[in-house]
Image (cartoon, rainbow, N blue to C red; front, side, top):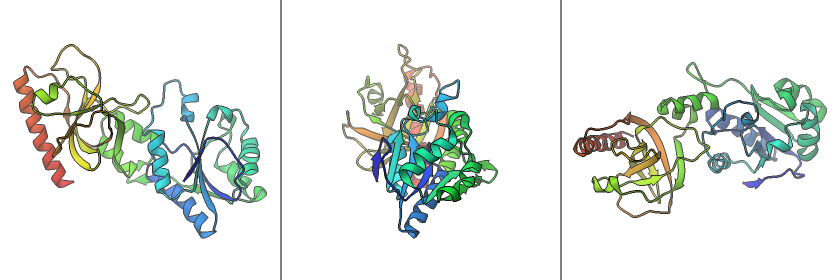
Length: 303
């Protein structure tokens, strides 16, 4: 997949429009429709998206992402997309909707197809919508495809729902809507070796600033180093040990004993085991960690 950060002349494309935060199941279905349409008609496919979530220009509170731009593009590429345009939203936010459609999308891409979700908005004041894209499809010579509401049982598959699930600790439900595991990717940093002294060495990473936070707690998941290993993950401030309120992700990787300081690892969250809480002494903490490790081993055998 070729990635562009500015508009260029690239005609006859099948386009998928959206921010695609998390590249969840509905996003995957929409993008796959575009890829399939392009292949069936011997065309190329492209995703038009933005560097920063447009919601951050309209919401009073910051909107955190479900995944990094790197992961977002990796997941889009895995769906078979030929081109990805990741643009600066500020350059386009003042366009009126029809002007953006005609003088940005049609002028540069002469699209054979445009696809969006049912609630897609664009243009100044969010005046553009699916009705406008459908209305002008004949005039500008593209096929318009609207992805209808996608649900699992009665739950709407949407980035905002997934974000709320993650921030409230409902990681299994979030992963169900994502169609993959919520994850973080960062460099392993040196800690104070407290966990190693307790007999449970960890790989420590910081939570990326723009990614939605899970509640503090102990989780079962996986760590991807060179291979994928089951892991016990503690996310929080380690309240049993006074003197620091620094948040850190501590990953105890099962069946692994290598130094990986400075390496980049991906941590996948599958299930919450328990809340984070302060223990009366070191011995009580060690006993609980031993129980957590056994729980993680059982979950690894079942997953």
